[in-house]
Image 1 (cartoon, helix red, strand yellow):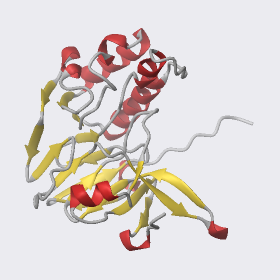
Image 2 (cartoon, helix red, strand yellow):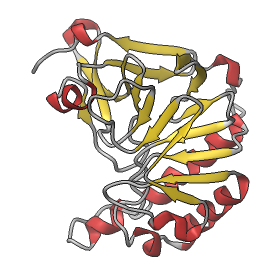
Image 3 (cartoon, one colour):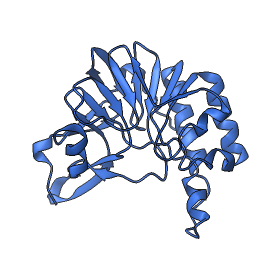
Image 4 (cartoon, rainbow, N blue to C red):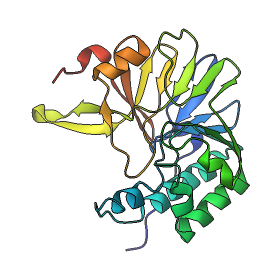
Length: 237
């Protein structure tokens, strides 16, 4: 039997509106800002594997390459002209120096394909900018703030990361499965962690209420729609 491949157009992807702009959500966890031709993602945590290995916790050393391959596929699919990485792109400030050659080559290729905006995070600071692009603590594009961590009490449109949101999706028979998701509270959106080894925090955790002012809805992006778990439907266990 021959190889079978499936392809989906950008217009098939689920769409959301925020701050007067239109976005397409990719199943990989990235968000494409249509009017700005900008791909947004958060918490790549590159070289988390090598950071853990230094502590004696051995993990396969391929997390950075896997993460960047998925990012390359997202850039090629969307045609993004700018990449906005919303903080913690590296697991620590020395991570950029530990990148193995294949992952370093992938990152260099990505830096050559699009303008790169590094929003600084609590793990990595501005370390990624040493390879190219521009680093800053936060940025406003149109009417939307881009930052690593949601600003408590903010009433403005905002896209952030930091919390690695995930949600319990109910299945038949009373079972549940955990999935990375976007967390939305009004005009504020928290992106899922993009990194291969990044963990997650359930959206019913009190940390989300502290950051966003309420328990957020959870949106799990699929190829042709969202699995939407309403805030009121989330369990407290």
